[in-house]
Length: 375
Ligand SMILES: Cc1ncc(COP(=O)(O)O)c(C=O)c1O
Picture (cartoon, rainbow, N blue to C red):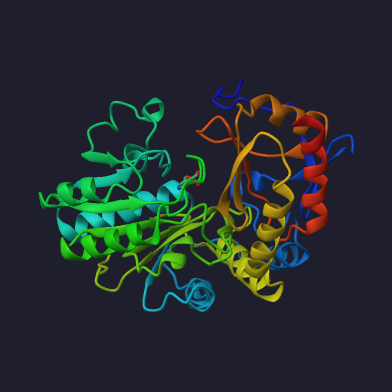
């Protein structure tokens, strides 16, 4: 049977991985500055992660959400400690799209309205409502196009205000730092006004932290820089360091009732163990602080690069915007220099999403390679 051919693949077969490096079946070593799309947060095969998951699977790997699972409560309290987001309620699922799907659904249940405001160049996943609020017509099937969505430019507070005045909006969903779109971020004043408008019009503000959360930007969540309190915060990617887990933090004004949300696999014992280990390692190895230190170093190294228009993003959610399309450069980085990087919707942006354990010496390897290719 053939695979359903939806992924354009690089011809590399990772066989083993350790921290920021990947090794193929011939033992060739690759520097991973992509983190499997911002997923690897504490490094590949971190010893604590391997140990804890192995120990947990020897006890119990999975049972359904119809029984008590104390690991979920432990994860909720560790999340409060790591993020400082008190008083939220936690619902666990399996992916970023699912997190946003549940967030949008809850917003609609809560407000009894159905229109959603989202932003141009935003990406929120591929399930029904999540894909409908994503700015990419190629991945929106007719069945998804029935959702009522309005897209605005990031920063267009006037447009959003006009739309909210109609009182038919249940949610505004936003990535404070856009990932797939190309690392754009608006001003603190915009995020604060958006937050206040949502409160005024009884609209649920959803911060999509699927890519930017779990310390990647140097803050635990990217929105925290702007001192706002979203009603729902969606998480996935770095949350499990590769083990599939997603979740939403839900403001206490949104009330739960039995059966309102549900999932078979969400919050299982292994997923919780993976995420608890991620939180422990972020704390003990001071990885949020490392994200800031490496960001400063990265910016300094980038200063002397020719053809560079901007260093975009923050922490370890970064983009190098050149004055040329980066697709050929990316291929050279992979095949000639053995360095994984990412692309973005903006064709001139090379995306850098490494493990938060990355060190200055790894950044040096990258810039040495870049200097031989960008002249
Ligand atoms: C900001 C953001 N939201 C949601 C998603 C969807 O996550 P998943 O692929 O786990 O469904 C992504 C994936 O890239 C993302 O970057």
